[in-house]
Each structure stands twice: as C-alpha cells, then as structure tokens.
Image (cartoon, rainbow, N blue to C red; front, side, top):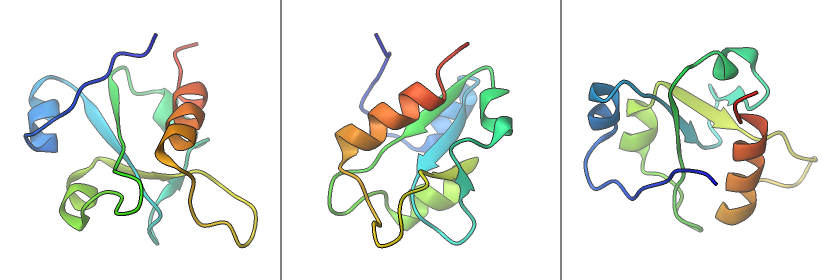
Length: 94
C-alpha cells in the first residue's frame, strides 16, 4: 500500500511537514528516476499531474527535484497510472 493524498496547497506545505518533493515531469533539467540521490531522501513525496495537462510550470519550479522516467525514442509520456507505478516501484523503501 502506498500512502497518497490530494493536495490543494503548495509544495511548500509538504516541505513544512519534512518532505522533499519530486515532480514527475519532462524538462530540460529533470533527473532520471534511477538517480541514486532520490533513494537517499528519507521522506520523498512524488508529485503527479493529471493526464494530458501534467503539472503546472509553477509546481514544477517549486519542486525539490524534477524527475523523468527514461523511455524509448519517440515516446514522450506515460499515462499517470503507469508513471505512478514505475515511480513507486523505483523509489520504494528498500
């Protein structure tokens, strides 16, 4: 089971609770989901956007990390359920 929530506030609200944030988005400065620094975070909140629109530029800019899932050439996105499953598996506590 993965704890989850819907957040109407900002990512800084998660920071006040001791979380670092990982926005799942394709940007020029995103890090790969297998970057070892991500698994060293004791409290990492994975931030997912809606299918189609994704996350807002403001949310992406506010995140501690912007994370991408490496994909084959020509594939630029996954639906949110698949992206969440990949992220949860890769970033699970070990």
